[in-house]
Length: 514
Image 1 (cartoon, rainbow, N blue to C red):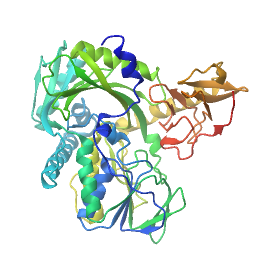
Image 2 (image 1 turned 45 degrees about the horizontal axis):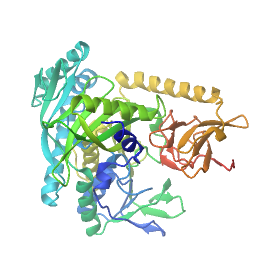
Image 3 (image 1 turned 30 degrees about the vertical axis):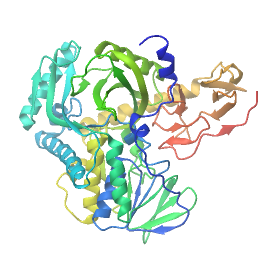
Image 4 (image 1 turned 90 degrees about the vertical axis):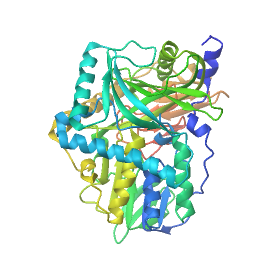
């Protein structure tokens, strides 16, 4: 890419290709109390699939979303529909045994099949294509891990093979292939589910923030505006559960950000979906746009939310990789995503805790939300409809396995303690008046650690950087213009409004004039 193109590409407001190419319906805010059979909180793939299946099963369902539907992780995905979740099967066998690993594969494959079947039954056109999925190694150390993963495939009867070549301009040691996986346009698919859901009486309310749950004769979701939804069951699909119920989910997951470029390539793309075994992660797939041209999606550069280097450096690293592998004629899109990673890399799907039989949760999809979110919809709707789901126990949130859960539990919470201390000890030297237009940073306001951003009109936006969840200090995200918490992944706008939980309250705003 020449030097004249790069600034325009990287100054573009981050907007996923999926949202720009899908006209989603708008729904009104909840402005009265309602009574339904089931309340679903969260308008991503898990919430929408759950609501859709419950309505199909005869339940009266209301779905509420704090922002707009499909504006969270489901709208920022790479949209691979795959049971190949990195190098996971050898690890699952080691930690949980062969039977568990086999069921994990079969359950994720069932989710892929559900998407295919639903596309047929609902007559959905969403650019679906079946592709082989590869995990490749570029070093001897990871080549051994890839070999072990292939051996795990053989033990579990997973259709696949190992190869020393892939059809990309990359020098690799080896790669493990999982056959007949898929990719699609996720929002075109989910819009059709929304249309079907509302067409049979399902209700959706946007701009409606769930604050808490009251449990009594009914299970009552109370909104930020004081309205309530009374129902027999509540399903929480809000990324981080907005209501924890003493499940301590914020101690059992951590948030990771990753980055995606959508590029028009100079070189022909051979098809297939690719993922590096090593860090920094590299992911490739293509999407055929409305004009029949291939948009190449280059993803990766994962890191814990609020930690690490300047976020714009991650986009630049992906561009350099894209130049090397496919050649870049133009960077058309860039966006980032936030994912929750569980202690054992298996999602939490089921009852919030054993003490909450009427409240369900789906979270911690570990970057594989297209299959795991779909599976969550199947499992949770079956539970509420009284149907048996053969894979439900596999994902129970109440599980806690000594290896690796305890090790990762302490590791993650030691990291949280370190970030908390580091933030409290940091007193910045930069002052608000030092900020240029379009610049944000941690600043010193009368000896106090604050967050400042000067917008393009010159207006200063100053907030207290202390996260309202557990008091960690947020850091500036240059790439997305947000304040991100390094402890549990809460994210806030330039004016302190909550974008991602588990925080519920906004950052404190400070009025300040130049």
